Amino acid sequence: MATGFDPSGRLPDFFTNAGTSSFTQFLSQAAPELLPGRRPLPPGLSADIAPHGTTIVAIATAEGVVMAGDRRATMGNLIASRDIKKVHPADSYSLIGIAGTAGIGIELIRLFQVELEHYEKIEGAMLSLDGKANRLAAMVRGNLGAAMQGLAVVPLFAGFDLAPAEGTAPGRIFSFDVAGGLYEETGYEAIGSGSLFAKSALKKRYRAGVGTDDAIRLALEALYDAADDDTATGGPDVIRKIYPVVMTATSAGTHRLTDAETAAVAEQVVSGRAENPGG
Amino acid sequence: MAMQFYASPEQVQRDRSEYARKGIARGRSAVVLSYEGGILLVAENITTLRKISEIYDKIAFAAVGRYNEFESLRRAGVRMADMLGLSYDRRDVTARALANAYTQTLGSIFSETQKPYEVEICIAQVGATPEQDELYRIMYDGSALDEPGFMAMGGQAEAIAAVLKERHDTAADLQTALVLAAEALGSVGGENGQARTLTAKQLEVAVIDRRRPGRAFRRLADSTLTTLLGHESVPEAELGDVDSAPPAPSEGKPTVSAAPEADETKSE
Image 1: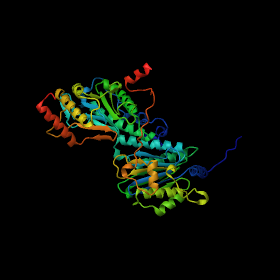
Image 2: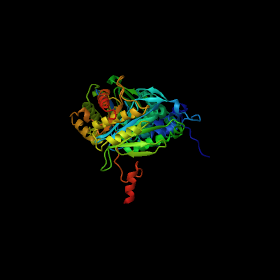
Image 3: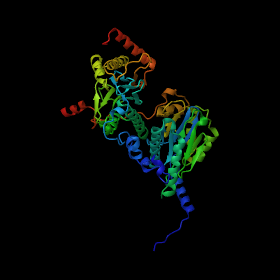
């Protein structure tokens, strides 16, 4: 860390100057090696050297948003992890899920969590939901070089907007592309290798203004459909009792469903599929 | 030829100390004390510019003196804490490490620059019990003190600390601790040495909650303060929250995230 090298023992100027309220911008001066996307990579494609995370779905509800992610990480044809957690709270009112290179994704989530908390502490106020999404887009953009060498990571961001524009619902979903493009989605969105199937399932089942409980069921049905047709997405593992991570963001803040709650819904889905495999 | 006047190092240090002390004495005071449920930070402050702030999960910052100077120190603390927490783990961020960085920084500013900082700061870290609370008081010249359970900073710190010393009790509840803090701050500065009664509007108050997991810092709002100062208790859930009020959406903001809104502005 740079602090140790000033002979006077004084914190360097970039710690004390008024400068920026952004933690990543501060890190780019103080410790650029802590930022993903700043590391030199050997030439060539390195897609298969690290585990990949897969499908995440998000659904806007009457009360806010629901986000769910399966638990599988893969490396080529192998399962790298059965119980990876790819959906996390970003701050007290928003959620983030990742698909792509798991290591960089987890690092991006940690950095984004600190970014939001840092702004809150420096400025004494929370960023707006759009502000948070824009910051995340900038961070994804920073990873473009690595993405082009196969270490791509794409987040899905959703949250409860404490001050929504008039006439709009408070639950909002944002998706991103590897170049840092930011798109607000209506109703639902999915990312990752199984997203095609998850979105197809949601297209038929989603209705605007769905309640949170119904949306949780919808999310697990969509993940089941993704796991059904995509080998890189894990279905509910009833043998090991590993179920998708399901989180909500509402006016009461973010909340992760307990394993027992998720298990109950997942088992309904599984028994429903035993009667009609197509759902 | 210009005359070179000799000033002894002692004289230079004395002058700087006196300058810093005078600057600090012009501002209003602040107190920090442990109570049963956490650590209470109270500053006399009628402005919206803050003297008390969250640094990390269990760590808070309070300061008196020149605003621009302690604000830059506060930012440095938040930046350092977040960087340590990201590099290691949230549990590895300690008040002691921050206090050390502050003493080094203030010490070198005091001895190397023309003008010393006119600030006095407190770094407080809440523990599982009042005995495990840590209060570090760092002076304008970089000297640091580890205070026992309570401390006062500012121009008339000694008089205020005397009131606290007499009545401070780590087993007191929040309401008792707050009333004590307000009375201690009001014990100085009145006309003809009379005590003043401070109201919620004149105080900036925050607590680091001993029992709250994760980020334990919360600010107490006006209405809550008025109730507590009126010797009534407030339920735990209504104590207020971290700084989380989001900014209101601006009209016709320049950067919208999705395309549809841009189309609407075109049709107008």
